[in-house]
Length: 484
Ligand SMILES: [Zn+2]
Image (cartoon, rainbow, N blue to C red; front, top):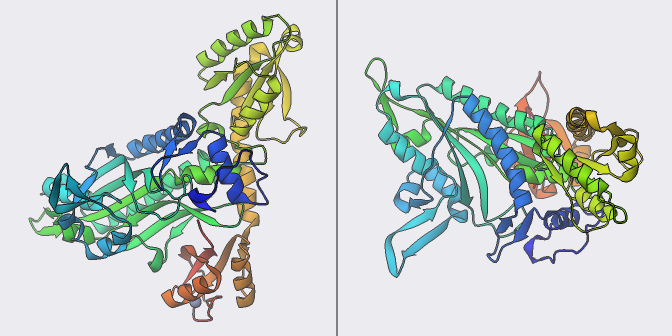
């Protein structure tokens, strides 16, 4: 993608020839974001924020169901704290923004703007934990973070972004490991069942691991251009942060132990995945569970008659009362322009109400997930059945969109056993290229240098095999792909 130096196109170009141009255009055209007068930053407009709120509520509900509570830690982190976990600070140093002055006074100690919060959270956990009875601590926070990115792509790469970060501390390693997998599964659930984006879960390779973690696990989605997108991560931090920040407790035998900590995060990047996976030449297609507006009502007003307006307002009140997220479009525009506008914004259902419909006691309901003219794309629904029929259609749309995306992922996941074929396919961005892999850093570096691809995530290997990339003994199975 060309980033923020590229002009924003007036029209949305077709999706498949140039995904970046389409993506960039649709993010602005659908009024999800605006470029901010700050390099590298975007403004999340109300429709974009509406998407974020849907994601946020799905995650937050699951965090609470799994025993977590929300809290809030400061944006600024003293430099002396940040530097205590050596690997962590080394990993993040190139991306940290610093505050060096307060008012007119230069600061005696620089303050980092959080790139992530393990450091400040760990410092506080050290104060809060004394005994095994104080564990586990299960906390999440919804915040912005800053990482000094050189390029901008809405949602995918911005200097400041919104996310959630979970931070937990446990008495035992096995409990911490369970937590890491539990939260990874929450991300799989939300990606697949809410955003309708199918993913592969697995462990990251050593070179792709979070700075300071013993193990990092991710969910990876596949974009239509054959690039993978990491959409959520869950880290087993071992006792590394506990030792650096002194999170100690007396166990049941009064012996002093270091806690085992985890962290896990999903950001608004997930929205970027959803936009790319589901959109088409007409614009966004939003899965119903993520849609700020599930159905839009467009009255077809002809001549001086306000019959359609009156009926549409009644219908709006009925559907709203039935719990649908519904919008009534009474703008002074031609119906055709309204149709195109709401299609571009990806609203799952459009309800048209004209004189003919009213005479027959029906409304015309149009599904956004289907092509124009496709069977079931358009139906006449009796007004009395409309709210229950809309609910059924929304469920069907959600399922159809997930099935379409899953078909794409599966048909672009390719098991390869030949080395030349492997290099060719990752270079061509043919999809998730699945191979037995040696797990060696130098092998991954070679693949990256030759093809720009990296391992996306790993899973156990059945039986013995050789690494398809280099010929050494394989230790795992890995998906390789170029990535966002
Ligand atoms: Zn290898």
